[in-house]
Image 1 (tube, helix red, strand yellow):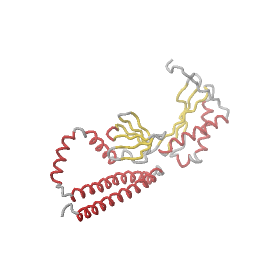
Image 2 (cartoon, rainbow, N blue to C red; image 1 turned 135 degrees about the vertical axis):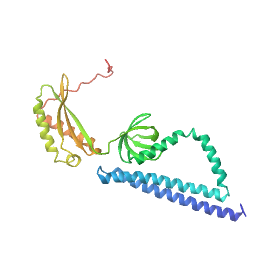
Image 3 (spheres, rainbow, N blue to C red; image 1 turned 180 degrees about the vertical axis):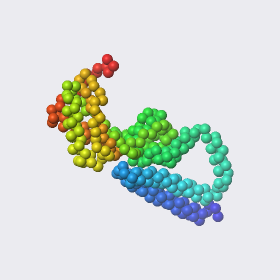
Image 4 (tube, rainbow, N blue to C red; image 1 turned 120 degrees about the vertical axis):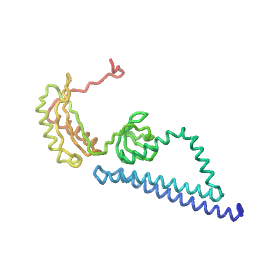
Length: 282
């Protein structure tokens, strides 16, 4: 008999089993997704690293769908036990969906945009990106990607949640190659040819040392003078690197170049310091 003591016991057992399965699925999926994200975080820029980041993205999306389906089955089990007919429910949901369709345009846009981001491989979990959005530029490492949102961890630790439909331009800094650019300021009176020789000598030495040897795709080169002011001439040094190591190489190059030009007695003009409270436009 429906709603008798035996019926409630059977109902409770069925629901408990469904909920237990959904919880187990959620925990297992969450564990695997976290494991793949840790692997993606430590992945390099080679083919294996890109494969890991791509696999992490796919696992995260598939895992999310599996969890939603598991909990949907819990809801359907409850409805079935109460003998609720799904036909009228689906019809009512369809009518309500039409009424709510205009209000759900943003959700649909975000979901479709997320689908194309994944299919076109615009970026994966672990990639370093610049996203031009409705709210401005968001830069950092992709920590999570779903069909609706992208979570980006910025350099200062801020976690930005960006709706996929709000992304207009993607700049992926973890694909192909990167270019380290270092501008060296020396006094106008310094002999440019001498400075070039000193820099080229240093760059040749660094090409066979770590971290440069493993991070460089080509040997660094001195482009020459790119700017001249009343007090300084700016000489640019560039190096083609593995994409995710561009910033590391820039920092190390600046440090080694600064030490070398000081060692060789090359004069560097002081950087003008603006008085506190001064008007930048004055």
